[in-house]
Amino acid sequence: MTKHFATDHHGWLELLSVEPPERPVLTGTRRVPWAVVGAGFTGLAAARRLAELHPDDDILLLDARRVGQGASGRNSGFAVATSHFGGAVGADRYAHCRRVNRINRAGLDALDALVERFRIDCQWRRDGFYHAAADRAALRECEHFAGYLERFEIEHERFDAEALAAHLGTGWYRAGVRVVDGALIQPAALVLGLAASLPENVSLHEQSAVLDIDAGELSRLRLAGGEVVADRVILATNYEATRLGFLGGRITASTLAGSFTRMLTADERASLGSESDWGLLSLHGGGATLRLTVDGRISLRNTAEYRGEKLLEDATLARRQAVHRDAFERRFPQLRHVEFEFGWSGVEGVSRNATNFFGRQHERIYLAGGYNGSGVSRGTAFGIAIADYASGEDSALVSDCLASPTAQWIPPRPLRDIGAFFTVRRRFRGVGRDR
Ligand SMILES: Cc1cc2nc3c(=O)[nH]c(=O)nc-3n(C[C@H](O)[C@H](O)[C@H](O)COP(=O)(O)OP(=O)(O)OC[C@H]3O[C@@H](n4cnc5c(N)ncnc54)[C@H](O)[C@@H]3O)c2cc1C
Image 1 (cartoon, rainbow, N blue to C red):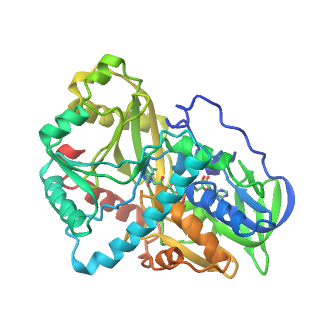
Image 2 (cartoon, protein in one colour):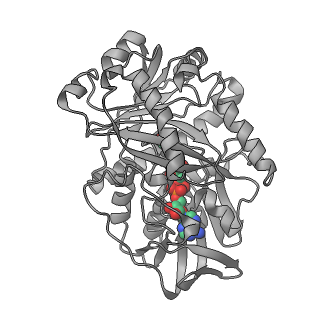
Image 3 (tube, rainbow, N blue to C red):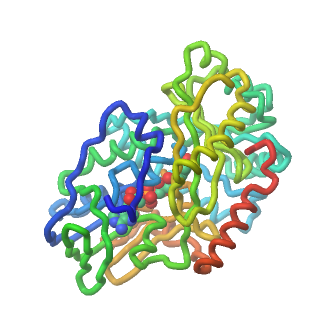
């Protein structure tokens, strides 16, 4: 693997009991009708859909890293049906919110069907998760969020502090809402399961970074060990599309970090309320994300920063773990003695106005990506839709994806660094006890 496409240890993949199968590196010259670059949720969904639409075509799927090492294998594992849009959702936002939720549900349903069909063992649990508030700003947001759920007739349940403590074993939160659709996943297990169940006409190559693309009548993809000549290309490379000359000035990335405890003992688990496993998202955009996993670990992620689109180095991650530790002990004083076993960071693609990218970039090059920290369901839906769109198929999902607002311009470095610094600072404003 080139240093250019770095990876590291990162929790979810390390928690798997089996070593993921290694896929061949692409060498030599390949001539194919379709090449998909990037094997995260978007690329896996796009390759699968292309294979269904063109059963006689070879579909080449390339990733610079091993499957599961990108953001798709290192996220917090919330596959949402209903997005939290923030603030009071007025009539001027109804159409946008409904469209985004339709996309989310299309992706979630597609994942659900695949998990069931291929019996993917990924801790899949589709009965929703909590959105909770510990401080004033988030409590206000709780009212906005509940108001929007009511107006949109989205099934949910409200919780006060006492009920949350009884369910989750933490007295930290003052109010919350449980939205009853949405799935919790072990993200690395899910992407590996999706990769293992690809149709036969998809060939997957790992550690096969596309270094540049010469876009003519045919696209020529240059790799370290070979070349791919493709009629059509789908880029599912998230924020790294900029390295190939696409989305420059419209996408950047934020680096998040979290920690996992060791497995809790039966007594420790008994101190955690009535639910065997659960997920909690903060109602403050800068707040902590929490999971109690099926195998009895608590994971907590509460840092996000601009690091030039890179993962955290070990020493920085260790410093961020002190922030995780503090938040963990405040929420679970009864587990103060429980040590962290893993720390991880991950990079998510973000745009200035939190939009997504979908469409044609060049006559025969298509791209789907972005998602601003919410790409499990949405990336899957965008992947399906971009394969349809590139194949000339029309659908309601394609129309919904095409309606994504245009991304606002992001200035180049060093202005970008200053802008990103203030954007991240804004994200944490008023976070208080929710961090
Ligand atoms: C810490 C963290 C927590 C998150 N939590 C959630 C969550 O709970 N729920 C949610 O919905 N979303 C969450 N997200 C966001 C979500 O993980 C992403 O939106 C989603 O994984 C994007 O999927 P993708 O397939 O588009 O991109 P990626 O998963 O980033 O995949 C892109 C792939 O392209 C490959 N690639 C890039 N460039 C090249 C190249 N030149 N040649 C070949 N391959 C290339 C990369 O190696 C990578 O594997 C989180 C993200 C992070 C980092």
